[in-house]
Image (cartoon, rainbow, N blue to C red; front, side):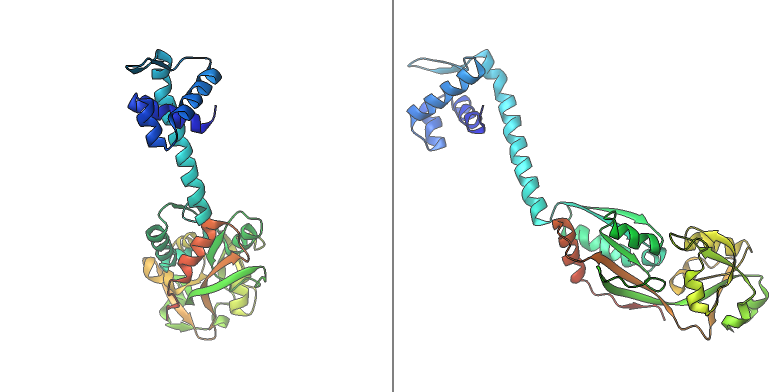
Length: 298
């Protein structure tokens, strides 16, 4: 049974007239009659009772009408899905993000822009440590990531675009003796117990802090996200370094101080694989290319 047979059948079923159905289909009536006979032969069922005066559907014909419509509608839907997928307006994009990207508003701007431009693209979003983001990109478990490059080695297989940057701040419990001072140095906190932000290849969570401070701090506890780390700081369990973008979000019980000899910034950088073939991912990239960023938290 061919799709054209179903189209011919529905034209006759809806008009109950071979002549008018042939005009609708833009074919000659004898050819239409032959196609209907071929369909009846394939189904081994008579679909129409016809004489010189009228054409009527048989019971088998009436049963075929909704099924034929359903099949043709599904085919049309499938064709549209394929066209939209190939054009990049339908599909899914897997995003990884760090907390700084969320609280800086970068992730929200991206999501809103994609939803407005490509509403049929599904965004699958998950929070990941920056080291884990890079591995997930390499293993094709993510399509794009938003996180800091500060503690990562640039990889030539990824395209990178810096979207925002924010100074590092030292987070201390409100009752900590050093909280009375507005500005500190890395030496002032050399013997403090730090809370590390752990992830793949950074089991203690001290990689970023060692780069910023110039020495490896004592890691007393580990957290799976900066937000959890700040909760542990509030509980009096240690100190940590975070992006200044988090300071207004978590004021109670935690104070934030500038380190005079630390001028590193915690960036929010978009990373994507080079030569990405996926149409939805390419459409996502085009949306981002049109967005201005360069946010600075100073």
